[in-house]
Length: 276
Image (cartoon, rainbow, N blue to C red; front, side, top):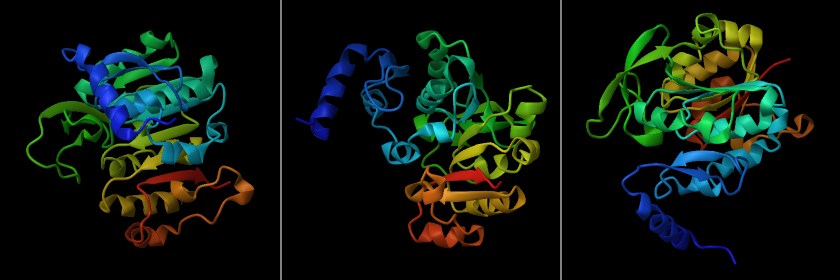
């Protein structure tokens, strides 16, 4: 018999009490695409990662992920929080591929950096780095969990979040200065900095042509997405309407109608595929 959400929540809070002095604890994911991987979690507030139910509305539509990412490939997880997508990507690329994970929040990074050791992964690199504007430092609201994001860009926050200064890199900077292997798949969840990141990757998007899982934040980003699709010759689908089988796939979004699509109920996650 399925466990109700309210009962599951009570169980998670009960399980979390013994560890209340430690904000996070190593937890093996019980189900879903990251099943079996160990994440550092506060299960009282991050139980969906432990249960494997996080982002099922996205991940079910990307199944099988092998059409985006295969054994031996390289993936970048930009804006990783607890590393759930990092774990999914590592399972997809296997021991012969590579995953590079980027997280700006010091608090989130402190937990993330444990993942390779917790899982015996020698091909996952965790970088304490913001992605967005290139060759700079930015002020970052780092204590908001998965909503942590850049200050002084286009995102607004309630109250006065704690600010920390973080190194920030453009996507081409990762290739050229950091010598990081180009990805076949990149996930961008940058809490509004995707507006800058999409246009600091000319070499990445023109030459290496990765597929992109793009979570966008705020209507100001839609203009940047529209320009990105046109300049770099990509097509985009709302993940709710995406079909892995290319023969069954619907028409891509019209870049000129992104604002209209957003107002009509488009989700905040796009799948962007380079045109042949």
